[in-house]
Structures are given as C-alpha cells and as structure tokens.
Image 1 (cartoon, rainbow, N blue to C red):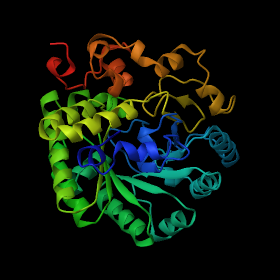
Image 2: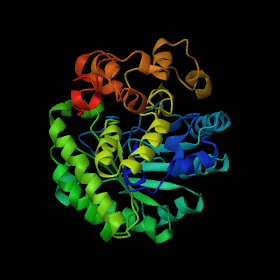
Image 3: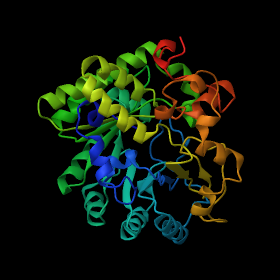
Image 4: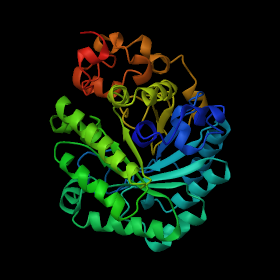
Length: 394
C-alpha cells in the first residue's frame, strides 16, 4: 500500500510515525503502513456468498453461502485470539460481508476487543438502517468497490444497477457520519475511468480512494491479458499522482493510495528526486519504514471456512485452520517453509528482484503474481514496470 497523498504531497512526515513509537497498537490507522512490529492487518472473508458477479473476484464468490462458514461463536473465538495477538485492524470482506446477518454483531465484538473494524463491500446492501447500525457499533471505515462509472462498473459487477446502488450506499454512510472510501481495480477496460473517479471524489466529498493494481488470482487469474502494459502502468501512476497533487494544491483533502504493486514506491521517489530532492529524502525514509509487500507478515487472510492464507490472493496455499489451531499460533509457526520464507522473502527472490536496488523498500512485490505467470513463487513479479536502469542493473 503506497500512500500517494501522504508521500508525494507531504501530508505525513517521518516524524509522524516515529512520534508513536511505530508500534501497531499505538499508531493511528493512517500511519499503520509505517509500523515496525508489522502485527498483521487481517482480512476475514466471512462468507463466499455475494449478490453480485464481479469478473475479477479473487474469492470466486457464489450466490449461495458455503455450508462450512465459521459460526458466530467460532467467529467471536477467532476475534478473541486476534485481539490478544495484537492485530490492529480486522477487515471484514467476502463475498459480500453484509449478506451475513451477524456481520454487525461480529464487527461490534471486534471493536469491543479494541480492534479497528472495517468492511470491504460492494455497497449495494447498505440501507439507511444498516448504515446507522454500523455507525452505532463503532465501525471505523467502509471501503466500497467501484470500478468505473455506471456502465463500466455494472459490466464488471455483472449486475445492472450496481453503480447506483453503491452510490446510495455511500450516501447512507455519509448521512450517519461513517468514513467511506472507494476501491478501484485497474485494468485495460477501466483505466480511462480514473479521471472520472477523481471527479467523483470531489463532487461527492468522498475522502479516500485506493487504486488496486490487478492481481492474477481467483477469477482475476483469467484476466492476465487485461492487465496494463508497463508503459501504461507508468502513465496511470503519473495520472494518479498528478490528480492527487491538483486536489492538494487546491486545498481539497483526500487520501489517495495505490495497492498491490510496490514498484509504485520507488517510481514515486524517482519522480520526486527530480522535482523536490528534499521531499524525496523524507519519502525514501518513509518507504524504508513501509518495507513494501508484507504478505505473510504484515497482512494475513482468514477464509470463511477458517483456512489461513498469506493474504487474500493466496487461496491455493493454506497454513492451517483456526478451527484446529489459533491464528496467532499458525501465523508465528515458521516450521512451515513457505511461512518462514515469506517472513524473510528478500533472501529468496530471484532474477531482477534479487538484484534490484529497491528490494528493501519494495519487499519483492507480489509473489502470488509471479507464481501465477511463471509457476515459481520466487520469480520476478511480471507487473514490475521499473526499467533495468531504474533498478540499478542496466
């Protein structure tokens, strides 16, 4: 996760993270990416069921719930363990998390245990009554997925009317004072919609947006050819930086992040090095704190059936099941070879990644994307768009 507004526009300085001691439990949410202890943010896919049919769904969601979903009782036992382990944020996802009737109960329980509870949703089920309930339980944030404006979004979501329903969900959250933001997955079919998404942020006074690079997992594994070329990835990142700076320069406060391609960090730094060397120095320090991709270390995933993954895209490799062992035990058990290597993956990456001068601030980027294309989990990430010259091997 690369905070474009934080890094490029200077809304966060290195001293901000240092002031809190850089421990996950003490850091405010906007500084968690700079934590030193890397207590994992946990994504819990509470259900596989979904009311939409998104073409790039990593969970390959279905219209029916799985029979082996963790029960409410099992979920609360899981939350007890996560809280004791020091997990700072529990992100409820799916499928569509709001199809679970006990979602508010589970989220409220997480808040009571001292965690920040957030949900990742398509937004279409957030009625005014649901928004009020989520506000009352102390939900920290609602991330709503939009992959373009009306027609483009509805095509991706597989259901006509999904855009308008999501916008109504956003309005309902805003009406009760819940912080709400957008989640946008970039690909060839919707890259031209990014300008409109920025316009929407401003028009609807939405404070946050995360632009996700495509990861080849789940139904998204069929979309490798729909990923941007390296040249177009650079253009898109430049566009996101430019539009973020325009908002900042006009005094309009928005949090803008890119996710799932840590090449964005060095790319932003190299651009700043030409434009503002002093700011670039601070950005490099923050990127070093961030440490790049944190799958299997600073982020983890628990499936609806209790399986534990390195992140939400690694569903083909489970480290264990919380029905049999607590998450905290599974997560720290480095007798599993892959778990051990993910926690020290800079030692194991190959090719361009191993030789890259930005390895310490990229962390080897996305291993699951490398595996999807090459069959080798330690091969270079094919989505890295930095040139050999930029990474120091020309």
